[in-house]
Length: 464
Ligand code: COA
Image (cartoon, rainbow, N blue to C red; front, side, top):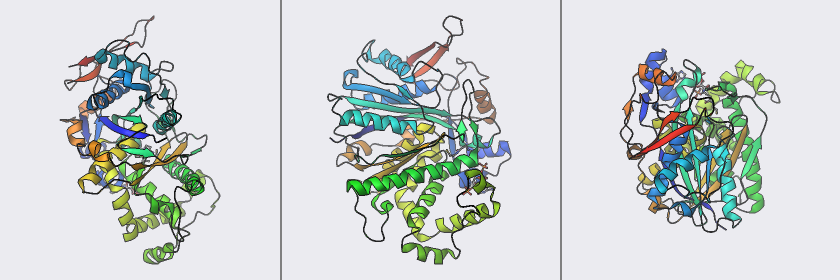
């Protein structure tokens, strides 16, 4: 049975910080943010927004757009790494908010949980719900999977430039207009790691930035090896002599903590895939240097990062490789459109991969490309650490969904924050009712109870 994404909707907070203002305030070269990391603007939440509000707004958008009633939704999953309760699942808050619009008890039949595994959990949620549909359990109902996060790092930390916030709701069914997932090829890798984590009670994560970058690459490569084995064994893709699996994937979406990480990750995977192919000889000739190897090729991530000579050479090699016409052609045709949303909005943790997918659809369509039948690959990564690779085919009816996509219009009018306003919001110095922007047709947080017996209870309202 086919199963996949029928429609997709976003909700992005309208407050933002401009990367160049941010660079000036932190004494950074604006070029590092704009060209080095690929950051333009970072969406920031107002005092009266939390990840549950963002998720509910995205769900409401997708339901209203498709004129769906709650009895057509069989499951509602939220994937997030911005949880604010250790026990009560975020989807229950979302149900509560949606019932303010649709009526109390209208989602009573609907199952679901909150999923956690850093930025990869949304992909696990999609996979589980796809299989719920494939198993014939959906009785014609949709599954609603929403990925929602507030990417927040310590003031002055190296991660602070890679913040953002937003939610993406994906509607799944057995007759999707947008994308049908390839069956039996979803592949995963997993390892107990401490590249990025957020212990109980801490609002911002503990991050080993360069370690997490390299771990992301390795875990995604490991999952890709398994994906290759599966697509070949299932006969989904038949490789001819001298071909790589990437030749058969028209678009690639990478996990995007910042947009240039997508470019870096693609280069790493392509090097891995092309290294043993006849085409590599020509590339090496063009680059004019051999591909470097670490002093201890079987060493740890720490030993590779500490190998300064290798790191410098590898950096040089990557730069030369990413400037070859072969890589540029692949990057432009398979990845570049997916990075536009990330540059405009910033890091969305669980939602960043899907913002990339959403962005790719809009900007490839605008180029006039016929997307029907194109294969889309997804490279999902979550710190801690796990990667997931899967793919799907764009469906003949995709145009019904994609033709009206307009990220700028869907975000709505944005309000630029001064650095002072941003820092006050970041440090929670403003009370919830001291919001900056007036809410309009959306859910907002109005109260978090502080009494002993009901501490943490949240009240939301829909501002019509
Ligand atoms: N002009 C242009 N580019 C510049 C520059 C300048 N003046 N200064 C630096 N750059 C480039 C660097 O060359 C580098 O590009 P490259 O990766 O292509 O080599 C890029 O900007 C980033 O510089 P770097 O020195 O690596 O940045 P950093 O040490 O400040 O850290 C992160 C970057 C991503 C590690 C950091 O922001 C972080 O910890 N983020 C959170 C964790 C994360 O996102 N992990 C990703 C995996 S999930």
